[in-house]
Image (cartoon, rainbow, N blue to C red; front, side, top):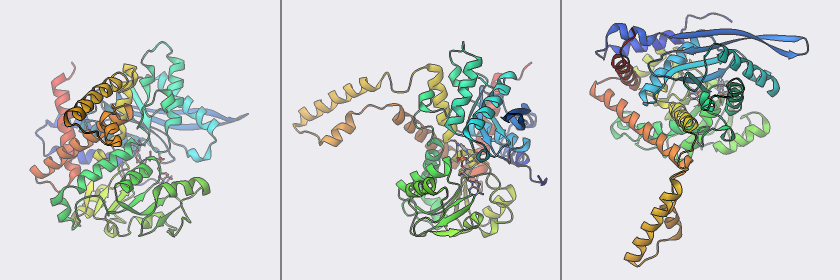
Length: 471
Ligand code: NAD
């Protein structure tokens, strides 16, 4: 593959350097928190068929151990390389700090095109990768906890958990070695859609701030906002779905093989069904096909959501971007040079560090569930319902009226795992937005990314300084 001078990891480090100027933290500590503490680059063979083997290149990078375990997704893509995995691991550290999830950052990946392999082979490759991680002590509920990322999902996480448990049957908390597992394998309700739901909460918070929307010549609030999404995978699909359910209009969706555009709005659920039936999002109802998906990024819209891969908005296309808000659902979709052009044009960027943190927040809830061996709400739900029922009955008898049936049921219902996970996620996303917005305004910064990095750097430095640096 042709080498380019672009380094995703360098861009992350440059951001840390830039943001740290707005902090009083010692330079030596900033130098430490930029480094990746442990990098494991591996090659392993897998038998593809009788007598035929293929060697795979894979990585696991642990960026920071100021909190343990470290945590971050596993990516299956041909673009996986050491620089990318290091950058994504570093972003995880800052992301966890930003939303007060007590983990250090990590990331992993296998350089493969998962579409080229059948399920049986993908399982063999995943299990072999996991056994390499076990061999070097790079996985475990107290050590390093992977999760899904681009090209992986609940299925791969279940294989990872099963392989880990086969090697560590005595470990009572073993299932906390990976998150994003299917529900039947000790996953948690709400994890699959968590990143997209967090993206929705984050965008909702941003567009509800009156003075920021006035500056962009937009009305506050989500209803009616015209949105284009790049990538209809896990994050893109759920982001679009929740935004549409709250009144936004999804006018364009880009996939790797082309895009669809309809200014009247695209029904996300129906498009997803169409894709499952035909294998592509193209040729959907009245929507116009766009043969080059990158073109859609330059269409007029209120909010552009890159939800595919990094380095999609670059110095080449930044000047043509017409969106007023870029909501970074993917990791690193905007290059540093492109960001400068966009900020100069007055584009408002909701940074990845904040916006796609919903996945790790709910992964944290899943890990808590796994190590406490009980699901949220299991012990309290019925007790709360009985209490609520007594309150409703007391209200009805003192006012001598009967509440309408639906309202009565809503008031009595106790919170189960799904409700608690979603409300915990919503609370964290709202608070984190308040924090970065207030730092941006109090320091008179031009952008939310710098304020997000300032917040995270300060929290990580406090962690290091308070625990003391060994020896
Ligand atoms: P995914 O594999 O489920 O979906 C990615 C989608 O993007 C796929 O449908 C793919 O076909 C499409 N795509 C690829 N190249 C494209 C292109 N050039 N134009 C348009 N579409 C293209 O992956 P995902 O889990 O949704 O991850 C997407 C991004 O979100 C990544 O940057 C990932 O790091 C980030 N992220 C994911 C999570 C998570 O919980 N899954 C959490 C945080 C961040």
